[in-house]
Every structure is written in C-alpha cells, then in structure tokens.
Amino acid sequence: MTQPKKCLISDIYHVRNGVGSIGIMGSMPLTDMNYHDLRVSAITQAAHHWGGRRQAEMFDYQYDTSFLTEGFAEHSEEQRYAELARTAVTIAAAAAKVIAERRAAIENLQAVTTTKSSDVDPVTIVDTAAEEVIRTMLTELRPGDGMIGEEGTATTATTGVTWIVDPIDGTVNFLYNQPQYAVSLAAEIDHTPVAGVVLNVATGQLWVASKNGGAITLGPHTPPRLITTSTETSLTLSLVATGFSYSAARRKKQVEILGELIGTIRDIRRRGSAALDLCAVADGQVEAYYEHATNVWDYAAGALVALEAGAVVETPRYGSPHHHETDKNLVWACAPGIARQFATVMRKIPTALPDNQYG
Image (cartoon, helix red, strand yellow):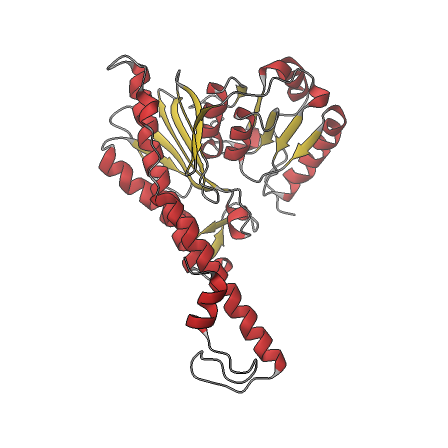
C-alpha cells in the first residue's frame, strides 16, 4: 500500500528544486515561509485522510460472534440475550465505520460541533449521523424494539426490548483525536440490561456481554477472550478510574472528593469515556471506577460487561425516578476483592452534586 509521504508528493503537489511552484489550484511563487506552511498543511491533510481510511477499513472486518450463542439451550432466555448481543455487535461495527469515515472527511470538526448541557459539552454532526445509522439498522433488524439515544431518539417498544444508545461516548476525545471513544449499545428488558456492546472506534477493540453469558473482548486482529476482573484485594493497591462533569460547579466538587480518595488508593486514571472505564474494570485494567452525573446511555452497556465479568456494580435502578436525573447518578464498579472497602468509600460520597452551573 502506498505510504502517505509518497502519495503526498505524487498526487497532492509537485515541488521543483525544493522551492518554486506547487500544483495546488495552479502555481504560485513561494517564499520559504509560505512553502513551509503549504507543505505542512498538505502533509497534515494527507495523514489525516490516510489515517481515517485505515481506521474505517478496520470495520470492513466481520466480527465473528457465533461463539456468543454456543452452549445455550435452544429457545432459552440466555440464547435470546446472546442473539441480541450479536445484533448489537453488527450495528456497533456499522456505526463505527460511519464515524471513522466521517472523521476522515471532515477537516475541521470544531466547525460542525454544537453544545448541549454546557459550553464544554459537545455534540458533532458525526454523533447524530451515527445515531441515525443505529436507529435505521434497529428498525430493519429489530422492528418494534424501542430506542433511547443520547442525541434525541426516543421510541417506545412493542416487543419489550428497548435499546440504550450512545453513538460516541467520549465526544471530547473524538474531537481531540484521543483514541478513547466508543459506540455503546445496550438492550434492556423490564428495565434490566440483557445485552451490551462497547466498541472503541479508534482501535477496533470490542467488549460484549449478555445476561448470564459472561463478558468477552475481541478485535480485528485478536481472537475472542473471556474477561474477568482483577483479583486484587487491597484498596491501597488498587488503580481507580473516574470522570468529571461538564458543569464547572460539579467538577469543583468532584475534585474535592478525589482529594479525599487519592490517599487511600494506588492511583487515578481518566479515560474520558464511562463506557470504556467500565470495560477496563471488566478486563482487569483497573480495579475500580466511579463517576457522578452520568447518563444511562453512558453506562448501560459497560455496566453489563463489568457485571458479567464478575465486578460489583452500582447504578441507579433502571426505570427509577433517578434514572435520568444525572444530579443524583453516582455510578461505580469494582473488582469483588475490594468491594467491601470500596463500597465503604462510596457511601461517604454524596449522591447529589451541586446544581448544573457553568461558572
């Protein structure tokens, strides 16, 4: 495959004797300064589109999920949940491909970004495009299912199955090209998640779980692997993940809470995606995770993955009055060996944070 630099020289512009004319919209005389600026711009654009194409190509790979339904009795509830998980993988991969392609095509993401709850809570046209892909595929593959999407989709189920969707969990990371943003889909029945998928769009790594079916990770070049939580039993030796609110007032309180916690654990990690943090607990990459002010689409799929990997998980009860009240949403998960110690710490943390003020 052609390397980016070769593609740049042969296809994007022609340089004569190091200075002179560049073949972009005709030729123009160059000083050392504008030659440098144009060359940097061309290299940047070539690398951006090259990387975007390579990222999108990952999702041409078909995730083999036949293993999800193996071992279950035919027509059992567990088989039904596993089939929902397989559907979720198919849809998540399609959405991830759209996200990668759109990111490659848009030169300035900031220009197509708006805000939601605060000036630092972004939503891009890619978020909405990905949610539309998910909604369309669910309509085709699972007619009658309901859907709750972060970007506004709200349909009522006639089948008893409702999908909780975050098209890009970690939008700030997406904007800054930090490789920690994911498609998150969970299917719930009677207010209980029964299938969930979290797919890191930047890497292609996928985590999938179904109720009573365990949690599994796989990737374009890695075979399926059952995952379990860390076996650590000491809170002081535990690595803990967390996140912060888009509200400045809440962030200040969260820093105070972190200040009280930091001396009792090994260290803190901050990924910027609740879904990926919960998968990190499931995969033993951290011992625990906690965060205030998350929404159900942030944690539904990841919480099921963590639970099926053996983690102790606490979320607002699905369908409860606090289900959508992020002021009161303290979500946490941890390895079972530190559950008693971590729960004691979590009980000391206030459930509600200050009002959603931006100053």
